[in-house]
Amino acid sequence: MKKIAFVLTLCMGVVLSSCNNDEQDGEFADYLVARPLTMSVLEFKNSVDIVPPVPIDESGKIYAYEDLIFVNDKYKGVHVIDNSNPASPQKISFIKIAGNVDISVKDNFLYADSLTDLIVLDISDLDNIQIVNRLEDVLRDNVVWPAEAQIFEWENIDYENEILIGWEVVSERRRVEEVEQRFNDLALAEANDAGNTGQGGSLARFKIVGDYLYAVDSHTINVFGIADLANPEDLDDVYAGFDIETIFNRGEHLFLGSMRGMYIYDITSPASPTFVSEFQHGTACDPVVVDGDYAYVTLRGGNNCGALESGLFIVDISSITAPELKTSYPMDEPYGLGVKDEMLFVCDGASGLKVYDKTNIDDLVLLDHFENIITFDVIPLQDHLLMVGDDVLYQYEYLQSGINLLSSLDLD
Image (cartoon, rainbow, N blue to C red):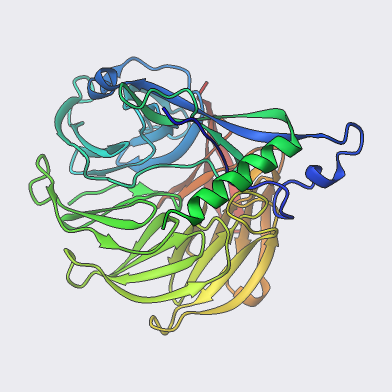
């Protein structure tokens, strides 16, 4: 079996200044190393289960449906929370789904990815959640790479008997020369080898529109017909480019966020999305939300997405075929974002949750800044705001000039 250590970025003036500044011991630097999480093929095929609430390992994206909140536990499954009383949410259960990072719900049918498989569950009875379907190998490029990692290792995977379901990222001290050599070897090798739906956040990769489920992976819009909710029809995929990360819908258009830009697709013919236009912004991690004539895009630098700087970009889409940058604002490490009326919410990583008045996009006014919390994803509901970060679910009530904390639920 071929063994390799996959190094995405290192001493190239992009991520690690320590490569050039490690003067104390010269030869070594700290790297974020992604180690593989695996399970046997048999375990994977039988990995879906519903169990009582468990502590969360690493909180991912959130999804709201009626009085329920679903919080993804990266690569492990979904925590189900009763939010009928937002001031006192209650954990209900945990749905174990190996390799899961995204879900979407329509009329009590929950669709979830399990690596390359699409799982369908009936959640109409929360005391008796049922697995009703599994479509195998329909999400062919559905591999999630942790953008913060500099080195990926899979040298001990038994590819004949094991399946890679995710990554654990740890900090390790490595010899710079060895890491550089591995990177050079890899680069040379590659050069020679030519109804009633819920609401996800801006980091979502699943989106239900009418009788269709759109699921983006790194290159493709995977299209499923869900007129028969329990039996999705795998339709023709649409190639959409490179490094696709997120999907957002407004009316007859899909807005795809990628590391390279924002792509706009027309879904007037919903089974066959067609390319309309794109906005290129260089290389950076990129979720998108849309409101009115503007698309709001957060770009996060300082990681494997490639950019050095982070910021909020506001793009004029009044001409849908010719989007143009209107203005931008610096940020520290932004992730998800959301819009409610004239309020704009930005999860700025370790810099907290920022709330802006966007009445005048050329002069955003900071209304609130919730510091000393780590923020990841946000969903502005009709009556209140959901936000997840650092294994805590936060809920805020809307005020005329900002928001106020309503409740917090520790997920660990």
